[in-house]
Image (cartoon, rainbow, N blue to C red):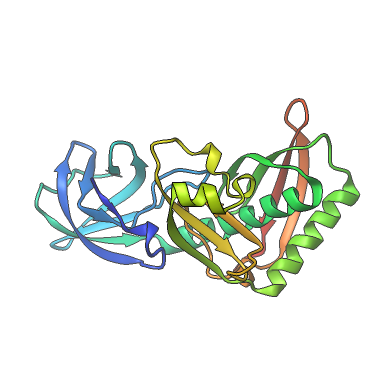
Length: 240
């Protein structure tokens, strides 16, 4: 099983690893900082470099382990490679993922509207929540609340916690632990704000900004109805 080092440190841009399995179009490494698609966040891209040869990483997926799909032929088993992450893409996804957490928290606290789905891109994002219909005034209030939190530059941190302890001590509605498969017994918790009284605390394996000030201005660009009592909110972040 690949050591998923992005869970411990998502600030690493370059790392060394060894090819454990080599297939016609993809490889498995003994360790990786490449983020695989999941939780509404797209995969990282970048390259693997071995003896001066560059292999473009075009997709990363987690199945039984983490697979790195390459555009070229794959390096042999046992090859030591240097992984180089497309940092502009990673930063964009990290900023949007943190913004999505803020949006989910505000929707729950101010509108009693739990999140039911989301999708991030490098230039926009959308979130689906349980709500009948947002008015233009509500959307404006939502945008204002988000930007107040951005201005506060709240710190973002992550840590691991046993599921049993998390279910006993944390607000499961906010952390959304109930959505995770029972097989996941060690949770990664992402926390925004003061550790004693955080603004948001959610079980999440994604990458994030270091503080909310990194997000820049949030613009709510619109809403659409997604069936009975489900609203989709779309937003964009100012260029970093």
